[in-house]
Image: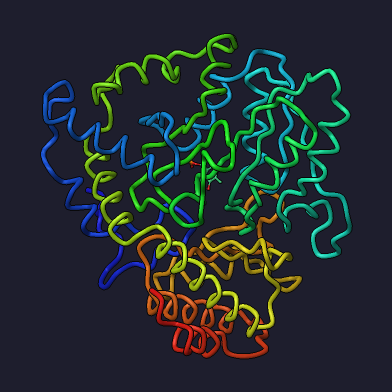
Length: 408
Ligand SMILES: *Cc1c(COP(=O)(O)O)cnc(C)c1O
């Protein structure tokens, strides 16, 4: 028999940037008995989560919930709004942007992948994996498209492979400045409910998100928030879609139901997550993430190791990428930390494999969890023979214990 309780005693430190730890309150909600998804109790649950989600995405428009991981919601965003051979521009912020681009290509969409150009001695060919979207490059490209062949601009809000956040309102302004009708599609799978996000105010046409990051749920459900224009566009675009089609779902959602069996128990969990986030207030949630990120960055700086994100204003409140000195394999360090201290860190993805690891600081966490996380990293780095300039533990304690630390 497979032993499912993998971690002997105490809490495992799940410090990867998603799935994030699931609070006990949510686990208890998920353990309620599964009910009839066509019955009256279910409609109340459906209506509640659909209304609550609007507050999280800051929208008055429909939000579609899929029983799928975030990747499914990526596919839904593309197939509902585009036709075969449509031209879209996507911005290469990192591994997740690359995966979305690969998916679009597979779906028969003509993608143009824009990247920031420049030199980065540490990471040849990965210049734009250390920076946010340069909106001026989007504007310049759209201005050259006088015939409006480009149908959409796709960007990742919080690039989880690098720990870099992009300025979405700046991308909207770039599209508007070019007087271009392209739809704006944003992946905020790991940004939502960690970093401020405003679907309506920022003029986003489709926002893609998922359950297992800031929403603190297990993996398994994902979302499309849509605009009136995106909905209108979906009526005439022709990429094949069936399971992911918005129209049937929106129709059934009016009564709180879905066309197929929804993920009942994860929706219980979602209902609880919404209560927790809204009771606390989104602003307090964002402030807490900013503070944690500041503490973790102070620790990495004290170690004297580079942070993957090189633009101070773009550093992610959700995770921090820690770059290893040349010759040190980040995955060997990660493995040692996991085996010795029962602490999971995120691996380097794509071009960054072996070059860096990622510390997640999102969702159901607190100061002491993060101080202990830094302690685990520090012990593991030393045990791996990495020279550290100073104590990250002392640095993070200075931030969390300091005078400005009382906003939780
Ligand atoms: C996690 C993540 C995804 C992928 O979501 P899955 O749930 O693994 O399918 C896509 N984009 C970003 C930015 C993510 O953080």
